[in-house]
Image (cartoon, rainbow, N blue to C red):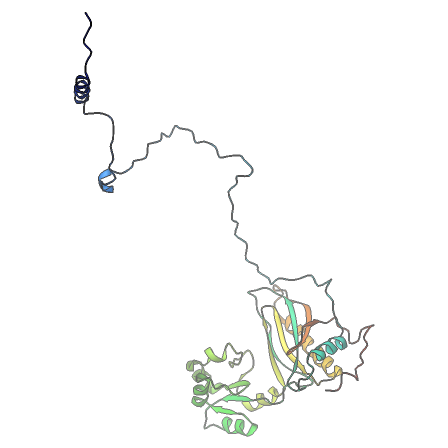
Length: 314
């Protein structure tokens, strides 16, 4: 006799009974996207035993870590090789510069000499005042800080000082009305000048009176007479710059001023301590609008086509 086959309803009831009989404690974690992050629990990394060996780093030459090395700070200024640079005699340099200054007034353009030193960054600087054989600037304005009712004030006004006194000078400087080229302080007014705070204004300009520069003196009138035609120079970033002539100066006048300036700087270098070495490595002549031309120390070159007389006129 043939067995009866189960129908579709019997099979569905059998499957339903099997699913209900399945134990509920299954090792399955179900996560819902609507559940808050805090309810899901925190991830705890697996504990690695200390006995486990750490895999060695890759030996591939193309996989290298970038090692950043700190550069050592330079103690001296950068020096360039000047052996291959073109240098000029004085006549050729003046001819090129005057060609750049065509159409300018001879009194408005100044020749400037730059002396480059081999020097340390944090060492002592060269600073002094020089009176050139041929003064570059004649309209020299001097301010004198001294008691306004003293004999020094009367003598300074008679000598041609543009501004004399104490409080008047301090107020003018703080207001930005600096209508003078040099400032001299009498020793009796030194304490009052230091308390006034004008050093913040005159210091960056190089005009603050100091005993090192010889501008804090007992007799201001005597210093004023010595200052007429004198120019201060100071080393900045390993370079000393100073105006040594006007456009209308002759080559002979320029040569005299140039030699006086270089000799004065060399004397200043010789006074510095032996532990600190400063050397003169380059001399560059330029002008207000012209380029800078390195000089070779000669007055006239072998191929110089211009003469001294041709450069003597304005």
